[in-house]
Image (cartoon, rainbow, N blue to C red; front, top):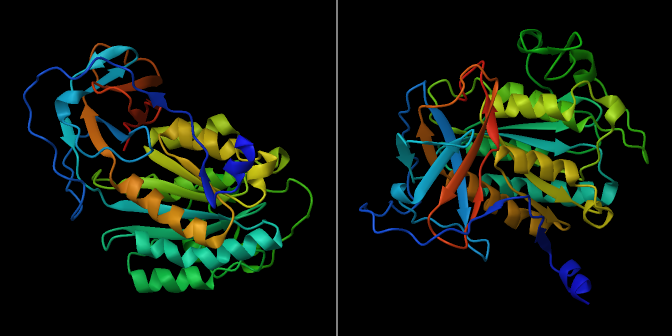
Length: 355
C-alpha cells in the first residue's frame, strides 16, 4: 500500500545518495548568522590555490537550510581536517547547460517540450544557459544566453525527436575538444542533418553527452565567480556501445572543473528504474535528482533545481597536510547540527585546480 501511495504523487525525489549528519550539537562558538540566501548574486573572490567546495544542506523534510554559520562547518581532505579560508552563504550566479534527451518516447517528449519554457522562470538576470540535446550524438544549441527573452525563444523552439536547430558556427566546432577525431560538441554534418533513432533499443550516448556538456562549461568561469551546472533531463537510458567515454572518464572531467549535475528523470523511467545513471552523476558531483511524469510537475522541479544550485554554501580551503603527489583527493563536509543532509562532491582531481 505504501508503494501505491508513493506512485500517486506528481513528482518524486529520487534520493541521490547523501551524507546524513548525525553529530553533537553545535558548540557555543562565536559567529554571526549568515545572511539569508536571497537577493543579488554574491561576488566571489577566491585565490586560485584554494579548492572550492559547493555544499547543499537540507533538513529532514528536504528543505534548504540557509542559516548555518562558518563555524558550524568542517571540511576534510583525504581524512585530514582543513581550515576553511573562505565562506559564502549568498546566492551565486549560474552558468548552466540544459541537456535534453532527444530520444524519449513520443508521450514523454510532449510533456518535456511543454515544460521547457518554465526553466526561464527559475533563472536570475545574471544567470546564463546553453540549451543542448542528445541522442546517439550531442547537438549544441546557439551558445550561452543570458538574455531571458532570447532564451525563452530558444526553449519554445526546442522540438524533440526532430532535426536539430542550427548550432554554433563551423569554426566554433572546429576549435572545440575532440572525441575520436570528432568535435566533443557535435559533428557539423550530423548537426545540419536529421537524426537516426532506433526505437526500442538503448541508442543514446548519455555519457558522451555529459562529457560534451562539460567541455562547454569547464573554461566558462576563469575568475571562479559562478556555479557551473549541467541540468540533465532524461529517461536515463544509456547505450554503452554508443559511448566513447565511460562513466569514470566523464566523472573525472566533472570533478576536475567543479561541475555539478542535477537530474530530472522523466516519463516511464521511474517505473522501469532506469535512472541509475542520473543518480550516480548527481551524487558523485554534489548535485541532486528528481523525477517528474507530467509537464506541470517538471515545471515545479525546474524552479527547485535552480534554487538549490544557486543557494549552495561555498566553502574554500588551501590544501594542507595531504599528499600533493596524488591525482585524486577525497572531500568530506560535516556540520555540527544534528539531523541534516549534506550534498557535496566526493572529491577532485589535480592537474588543474578545481575551478
